[in-house]
Length: 287
Image (tube, rainbow, N blue to C red; front, side, top):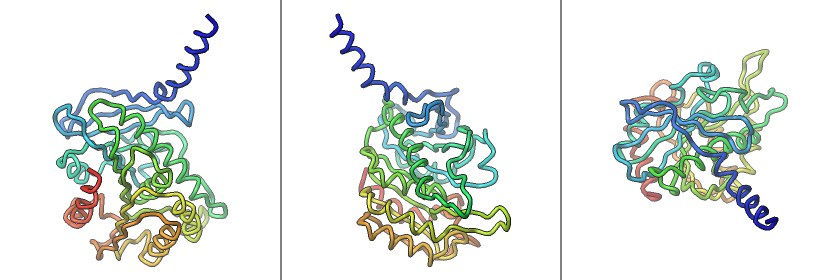
């Protein structure tokens, strides 16, 4: 009897992570690519429940998953905003090519709410810590969603824009077994002085990407533009060099100027014809 009890306890401990990560739908599907909110309990942050907005093609055939990591903005920091990080044209582009797309609201944003991971002062930047926290959020969502019958368990592509690009760079360093590749659009992080409002902590960004590059063995595509007003070409090239120096597999593309600010390449409807010819051959390698 005691032996049987021990076996049951061991089994319960073994399946506990899977139970904790069970994704549950909230409400029905919408008209736009079957849009639906899913709730995912966080395994490494007890009590936190992540939200993901899921889009997918018709039918129940298992689809490869694209996980999208959003940017940061003043609006993004207001909890409860359901549309945050949903770039309609990009979502449609992936769904039309047979992917399921999950826009994951990281801690402190949108339908997930709570405290953000990236609260730090300019004098004590912690970009590496934010990368780990954001990667944990994305990994939690990936673990849960790839258990669904209509999602393939492997071949995940993680796509991030701006701070979301930094998040998927952090995820690449975790070498998650389900993640085949990451795509970073204009990614990075920066501090902002509460006294002057000036951008700060960019040198620390270069410093903190070094250990990520040493660990990362997940293929990455970085897409930036010559007129990105947030992360300019000189800084970005330093980031790419520092990341590659550790052995990380990286395909780096600096595209010509886009509009008035190339940082908006992914969110803009006009950006699709610019980035699609770069992205499509890359993702086909992992299909």
